[in-house]
Structures are given as structure tokens and as C-alpha cells.
Length: 474
Image 1 (cartoon, one colour):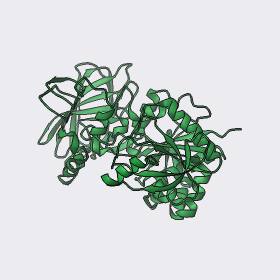
Image 2 (image 1 turned 45 degrees about the vertical axis):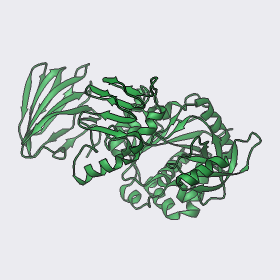
Image 3 (image 1 turned 30 degrees about the vertical axis):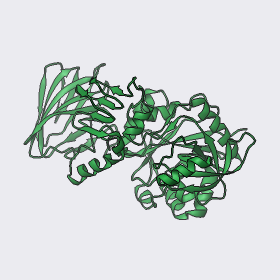
Image 4 (image 1 turned 180 degrees about the horizontal axis):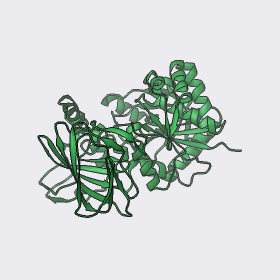
């Protein structure tokens, strides 16, 4: 009987090179950049129809757990398990805890490890590659996918193919892994025809990976094992033990195992792969007009060529521009030449150093119960627009430093304020004094929209004391 494949979706990245659209609270994998689905959803959906494929194991940080859960629900794909990392420790530990989880389900479990933010256009070709890789994994190989290069790229690591492992010519042993090269070396790699881009996707038996990890990095193995053994479950989430996982060294699969093992293999593929690692790479794979422009949103364009133009909240006019990236959001605008795409990180670093928030959150911030959106703020006041999903409710909470006025715009709100419980309808309002225990609930069948006016000496989101919470937030 053939072993099941357990897809491991690694969703811990922050995607800062796609700022201002991608931010810490809403990174690129959870954004619909190329279709109606997000990159995370596309990663899951491309596995549909493959035989003996388990529901996905999703690895993400705790802050993104409800984003991932809601997006899986939207495509009717419940996860096998959502594993929450208390801190980021790179891919080797993340895959190790996934391997322990899969082995609890099946002794011969095979893992298919995929980042959540990549593009693959040729789905049948990808399925063929998985078939090839599974056969090699059954033989005890640790398999990676090598992407056939079409240019001398310096932004990827490379894999040098070794001897052929099958008669079809698609599988090879791995001669060596190579770090990101300079341009001259990348050109030589391309000319040789024997070097492939390292895709960061892998197929191997869970047991084989753990054995190799224990051999070459026993410190990572032990810390990951303890974090898994001491994990706890709430709702549909598995929380790794915080101190055990935090003690684990941060290391990639490549450094920890693949570059050391004697069992590495590669399936060479040409499947329309792209890691969407920058605005220029996103522009490359986006639909273009006759002059090479990509336009998203409310954009007026005249005499433009070779540009990527995206408007999220306002109208953007671009006249006579050449080879530019222009991305507008509610609170930040990026304008740059395509050749400077890798330098977005400098803007993000500036925001960090200046202790600003535009790299952390959007003006609209999603929560498991809905979202809130900043409208206006000034000294000692802040105005928000709040949406609460039908049947959802905020935590029972209080604030030490702020009072709140709530005005219902549409829907029906059940409001708890101290010992008082009341129903509010459209155009009705209430007042929450400083220090008063309160709760908001949507008891209707439609989304509840409200305006919240906060006033007080401190308006930060950390001024929340929760007493009860359906979502197990501390």
C-alpha cells in the first residue's frame, strides 16, 4: 500500500520586499496578488486531485493563525493541523515538528514541503514532479525540486545536478548546493545546462528526514522533539512549547540537512515557478497590456510603458512613466524603478528605525471576529470603523486609559457594559467608561458595522485586559 503524502505549508515569512502591500500583520502569502485567491490558498489548491494526499499541515506564527484558518475555510479545505510557532526558527525546525506530527498519523508518512508564497503555473507538470519525487522518497532519498533557469539570476541559490537516477532523465543525484552567485558565475551556470535554481520545495519520508537531522544537527532534533512533545492544543491549533522551541537553533533545511546528507536527490522541472520575491518578479508574471504595463485598481494611465501600477484605496494617475513600480495603499505609496526592487528593504528598515508602524500593519487590521480600520486620530482621540462577523463577539475586556463611544451604522449589536446588557440598532449608540468591563457581539445574520470613538491618555492596542475570549487570546 502506498504511503500518504502530507503537505507541509510553511507560512512564517514576512514578505518585506513587497512592502507597502505586504506587512508583518498581513504578509504576502495572505494577499491575492495574481488571482482571486491568495498565494497561500493557491499553494493548497494546486494539490487538489493528487492521489493519496492528506489534508495540509500548516506551520505559521501565532499572530497569523486566524488568517490561515479563515483562508482555508474560504476554499473548503480544513487543515490536518495548524502548528503555531511561538518564535521563528527557520525551516529545519518547522519541518521537524511537522515530521513528528505526520508520524503520529502514519509510520511511513511522506512530507511534501512547500513555502506558502510561491507561484506554480504548470499544475500537471508539478503533479508529475511529485510522482517522481515520491518514488525517490520511498527509496530513502531526500528530494528537492530544481527549477530549470531561463536567465542568469543572482537572487537564487543553485543546485548542481549529478548522475541520472531514472531513465526519463528528470531525476538526478545532487552534486552540490551553491550559494547565490555573482552575475559572471550565474552566466556560467546557465551556459553549462547542469545547474538549477533551488526552489525550497522538498519531498522525503518524515522518518528519514528526522534520522538525518538527528545525525547532523542533534541539537535541532532534540529541541524540536521537546517542543512537539510538550505542545498544547486549543481550538484547532497546536501550540509548540514556547521555551523548548525558542531554545532551538535557527537553521534552514539546506544548511542543517540537505548540504550534508549523502541521500540528496533532485527532480528537474520547468513548471512556471516564481518565488514572487520582489515587485519586479511580480510584474514579470502578471498580465500585461501591449506596452508591457500591469494595472490593478483605479488607475488612469497615459503614455506609460513597462510599468506595474497598483491602486488599493485611491485613484492613481500615471502619465509618461517608464519601467516604474507604483503601489498605493491607504497609508503609504511606493514609487521606484523596477531595477531597484531589491532596495525596498531599506524603506522598511527606515520605518523600523523611526519606530513607525507602516511596515507592521495596514490601516485595516483583521481580527478573528472581523476587522477594524483607522479613520482619524489626534491628541487623546482615535476614530475606527469596526466590522463584526455574524455570530462573532469580541472578548470580555476593559481598558485602563481610554473610554469608548460606539455608534451602530448597520446591523444589530449586543453590548455588555458592566452589569448592563442591551441591544443596539442602526443609529443607536452607547458609552463605555474607562475601567468598565465590556463586550460587543453581533447577534444578527448580517455583518455589524460600527464607528468607535476612543478618547483618553493612551490609545495603544496593548491597553486591553481580557477576562473571557472565544479565540483563546491572552
